[in-house]
Amino acid sequence: MLTLYDYLPSQNAWKVRVLLGLLGITYETRIVSIFEGESRTEAFLKLNPAGAVPVLAVENGQAIAES
Image (cartoon, rainbow, N blue to C red; front, top):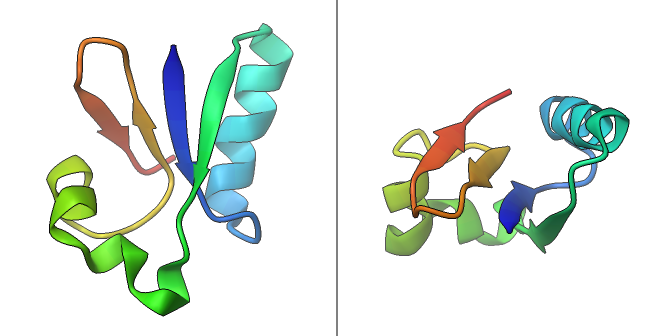
């Protein structure tokens, strides 16, 4: 299953949500509280060194960052 690391007000994350919805692709959402520093944790920075959302984690463990 895909996992979308998301911040709901993010327009870039919105684009990914819309695309996945239009394509009928199921995914799990993990909300990232960017103002509380969750996008700057070591674990998140492994997914996206830029520390930005959205990040789409695919089943093989790789991550696709940005929109």
